[in-house]
Structures are given as structure tokens and as C-alpha cells.
Amino acid sequence: MGSMLSRRAALASLATSLAIGRMPSARAAEKLRVGKAVVENIGFIPLDVGMRYGVFQQEGLEIEELNFTGGAKVAQAVAAGAVDISLSGGPDMAYATKGAPQMAIATITASPAFMGISVGAQSTARSIDDLKGKKIGVTSNGSLTYWLVEELSRTKGWTTERDRAVPTVVGGSPTSAFAALKSGAVDASIGSVQQGYQLEERHEGRILLNVSEYVKRLELFVTFASSAIIAQNADAVRRFLKGWYETVAFMKSHRAETVQVSMDVIGLSRSLAERSYDSLIGQFSTDGKFEPNALDKLVASFVDLKLVDSAVDVSKLYTEQFLPKA
Image (spheres, rainbow, N blue to C red):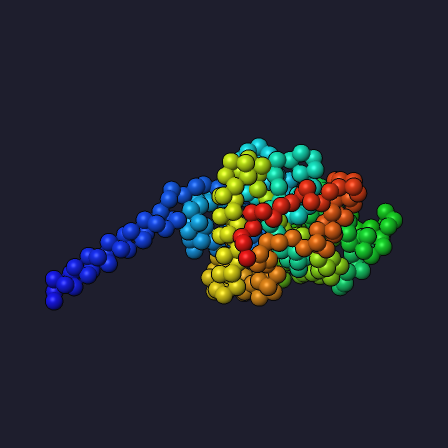
């Protein structure tokens, strides 16, 4: 009996070894350099969740995460050949019309609910109307946050110089935004809703409104691939997106794990990470497909920012060929 069991154990061990030899993870992992426009954004947290729980590794990918301080910075890194995949704001899609060597390959979210406008503790503002004629901190000129301030003025009909909200560059980090609010350099600041939650927790300010109050749908956050990686290793791009959307599915059923990664990566307290998860997890795209109405709104923003003219061919700005098959 003992020898039979030993023989069975040996055969089982051999079968396991052969099976492992056929698994995708057995191949040498291919490195992908993935850049985030900003690290303090829960919209980009699937990258970190997927890395921590081995999802990208199962796709034969080794991720090198690179963090930047705004969409313009990460786009420059892509152009310089230092980044293969980037996670950034939808307005970066306009760079392709100027010859930037990148292509939008998937949507992360078409929900503006990830963004909010916050005010400092000294502010008397109570509603969106109280932002008329105020200076609002943004990450950089021509950025998503810049456009959102301009769109606020357009939506509210604040057309004169006295009435329009003024986008004021403060930089891409929450620290710089908080400092600008505290010093009075700006009256409000636009950024991730987590920044508003953090201000409330520190008793240094509060979130005044969610951007979805005046922008309903917009290709807010998008995944881009460099022209070089598309030409040289399109399969790695496909595997990255497969891993990304597998991670999103994992996040939806693993609240505790996602909350912990958000705490570790973004530096949120547990209560803020839980609040962010509960309010935003349902807003992540599960398939990466672009929404026509959200794309139309995005292209309208390009025209508003004078990044393109009204004759732009939207189909040239993105592709869905790398998305996982249903």
C-alpha cells in the first residue's frame, strides 16, 4: 500500500510540474513601464491592486510603475520613450492630433464623479454659485482640471472676466493644492474627491461639490499606449488590458484588499479609503469600451481649449482593438 501511495504521489508531482510548465507565468516576464499622471488618484489604483495580487504577473508581465505630477509630464515621458503605457486624463487624447506618439486604448472611467472642487476651512462658499469670479487651483495649463474650471464657467454662463472662474496653476500634488488653499492663493481647488475628504478629516477644508454636478459624462481617465510598444509588442498591450479589467473585477468583490492598497499607495486613512471605495467602485469601466456621448463631450473640451479644430476625426484618437474579448 505504501509503495502504491508513493507512486501515486510521484505521478501527481510530475503532472503538477508539467502543468506549471504550460502556464503563461512560466515564460520570462516582459517588463512594461507604466506611468501614472498622478499617484494620488484612486482612479489609477487598479494598477497597484493588480501588481500586489499577481494579476499582471499571471499575464507574463513585470510592471515598473512610474509616477508623475500631471498629464503633460507623463505625456512627455511617453514621447521621450521612457513610458510604454500611461494612465492619465482624457484630454491627453488631443496630443495625438499634434503628432504625439501615443494612442488611447481603453477607458478607465467616463464618470466625472471621481473629481471634486474643495475649499479651505476659512471659505464661506456653500454652493456652486459661490465660485463665480473665484480662483480655482488646477494642476497645469491645458490639463483636465484646467478644462473642468473653464467648463464650470461655460455651464453657469459666467462669460465676463469679472464673473468667470479663473483656473490657477498650483501643481499636481495634494500638498501644493492644500498649501494654496491655506495661504489664500486660490479660493478653491479642483482634484480628486479624496483631496476633499482629506481636507475634511484634517479640519482644513471640505469638498464643496462633485464635478458630476455640472458634467454628466466624460471620458475622464484613459489608458494610453506608446506608438513604440504598439508596433513592437501589441500582445503585451493586450495582456496589460486583460490584467487591468481582471483586476477591476477583483476589486469589486474584494473591498478590504482594495481599501488596504489605497491606504498604502495613496496614503489615505482607512475611513477615507473606505469612503472612496464605496462611492466610486461602481464607476470603474469593466470592459474599457469608450462611450460615444462621453467622447463627444471630451472632443468638445478639445475645441474649447483650442487643442484641435472642430473638424477633428474622433476615430483617429483611440482604438479598441486591444480590449479583452467578451
